[in-house]
Amino acid sequence: ELKKEHTVAYVGDGVNDVLALKESDCSIAPINGSDAAKNVSQIVLMDSNFDSMPTIVNEGRKAINNIERSASLFIVKTIYASLLALLFIFIDLKLCIFYNALTIGIPSFILALEPNYEKVKGNFFINIFSKAFPTALTIVINILIVVILGSILKLSEEQVSTLSVILTGFIGFMHIYIISKPLTPLRMILL
Image 1 (cartoon, rainbow, N blue to C red):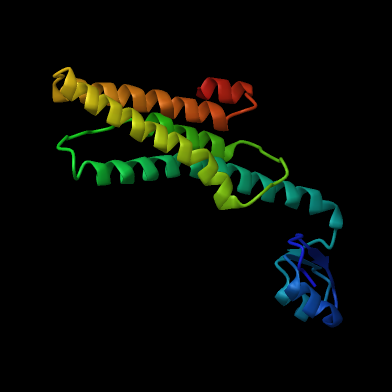
Image 2: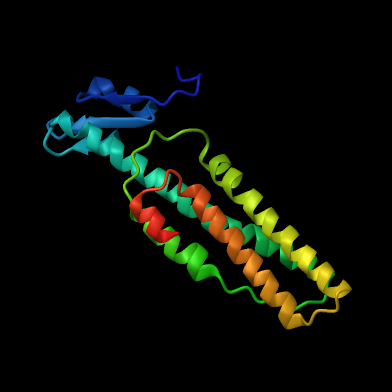
């Protein structure tokens, strides 16, 4: 019984293995196994060679780790844009922030394709939000400070918008630096 939050993989090739294959987190059957075992398995080894299992595990780790990093980039934008939309209901300011290509689009494309075979740790959503929320909150606070100081110092809307874009871009690049650790040559070029 799976009560301790362990991830369980099960390998089976016969009808007697079907229940265990269905209950496991990752079920594997060889191509020469029974039809019942192959039908309920998540992975069917087409050559019945278990030497490919490390490659399968590494590809899974790569997919999850890279999606996690890329998703945090998009979640930052979603969080801060939502918070700013709510705040600007009460503050009359037309703010256009155009930094998405440099701090979200290009980095997420590069990071998503990079090899990343580290062991997957923790909860996927908690991992994403723990990286994204501080960055998004920092962006919102910075923009609010710029808006408040702009009204005190009588800055024009263009000046407030420019300062907001510069601060948002800087914080976005800091976020890229944080999720790119440890730095590799490709990640240094990205930065």
